[in-house]
Amino acid sequence: MNLEELAEEFLEFLDESESTAILTGAGVSTASGIPDFRGPQGLYKKLPQYIFDLDFFLSQPAEYYKIAADRIHNLFNKEPNATHRLLAMLEKKGMIEGVITQNIDGLHQKAGSKKVIELHGNAQKFFCMSCGKRYTAEDVLKMLEVSDVPKCTCGGLIKPDVVFFGEALPESAMAEAYILSENAELFITMGSSLVVYPAAHLPTFAKQKGAKLLIINQGETGLDYIADKKYECDLAEFSERIISLLGEV
Image (cartoon, rainbow, N blue to C red; front, side, top):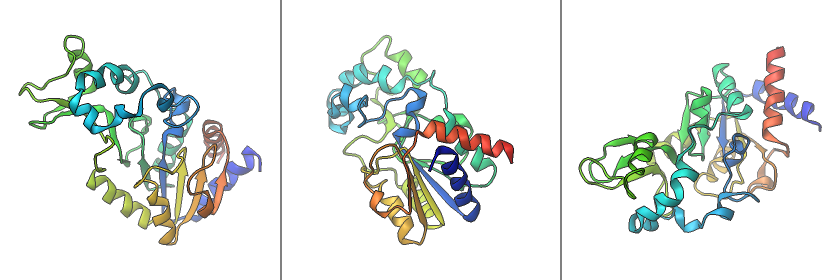
């Protein structure tokens, strides 16, 4: 099928579904200039994977911030791409219930999505590990201009509000994600390799509850074998085509 046919079939799937859940991964944000983790130009090719370990952050926060401040937390100039805009449009039209995302860039919200469940946190948010006071990325980056380690007014270490390796996913986000998945007639994954758990269990869970599973990704995923449909296409081009079709309706 060509891109036009895929886009038309995609909209047919949405029209036939009373409840549709979306799961997005790093591949959704690459068109916004944010590298994925495992791709040819991914972060794991440029940064040591231990950077994302909780023990490393706690034992060497200065080293973490030295490496991560510009590469991970300085995302102010990044803009939503066609896929972010499409999902915001579909939510506004009542065609999807919401977005579950593995991404930490906040671009779904920037595009206008209202129901966004962030499984891995948000790289633009920070908090004090001692008193819980909240900080923005702007606050922390200003602190890093004069200090190697950002500290709270109480003296506590300020941590990014993201899930490091060695940490559990936030219970409230996972609970919301499972409710959305359980109620879905159609579950769509976009730009995810579906190899990171427990997020990758959500499509399987939805399918067990009777949902159709549509996977949209360039490259193999860990759940291709249970998908009802798999689209191999460029997500940004695919999304632009659907936005165009919706404009013609």
